[in-house]
Length: 210
Image (cartoon, rainbow, N blue to C red):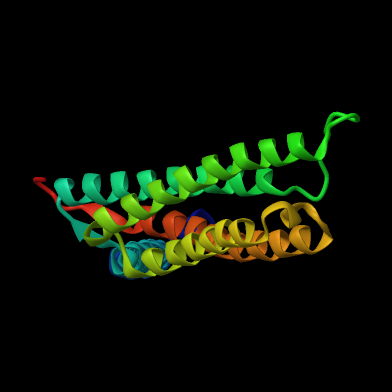
């Protein structure tokens, strides 16, 4: 609305100053109300934004586990060592009795058994290493991870016992099928352990001042 035009008409008509003052106050109030409406809208947007940030921050706090720096470092190192041992077993098991492998064409049965014996020793060493690490560090990582690691250890132990009992028959069709079952069981615990560790680390929050 054009404020100048009505005021010009009023002045030319000789209307008193009281009327001019009243009209001026009227237009001032309209302008103030518009400004207040805009300010209220902006304020509402700011409040909504702050509430969203507060909800997000609270959600992060609710998911966090607050620990000392010493606790964080101890648990982190324990999980790292455990997973290192798991990875060694995974490689050893995959190499133990692979369904598909490149072997010398003229390799004798004795040579095959010799290579199997070498791989067997590697798996035994890795399995013992996992057992020692998981038990010695058990107080420093979650029970959930301990259970999934135990699944891996039992699967590796089953593979070792299977080869021990079967001997030369370890490399026949039945031996390969049994090895695959043991590998599948190991993988179940292995990938569950990965998920547990990945979910655990972001939750650990160091207490201020630590």
